[in-house]
Image (cartoon, rainbow, N blue to C red; front, top):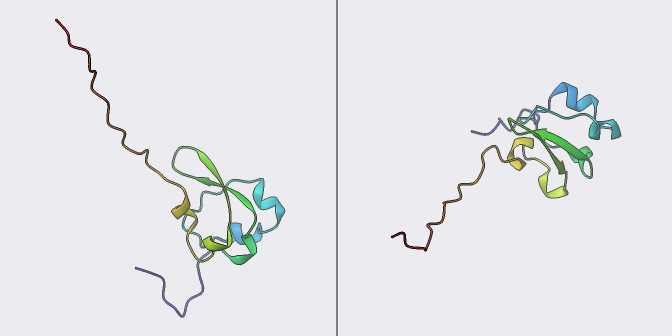
Length: 87
């Protein structure tokens, strides 16, 4: 469910204070924050549960949440069966 239209988009207070160039230096754990137009062009380190993943903010990302652009699970890759026969 999305946020009510009469409310402003949510952004963590600590992120709002750091929307300058120092924003790039410190990682963020706030995956729930909305991306503001002022952050376009910045490189942000977002926590995925294990590591910090660097993402550059593009104009298409404005209005979305930070967590949408960092995968939290590894993709499943099935193992291949060997083609050699054992005797």
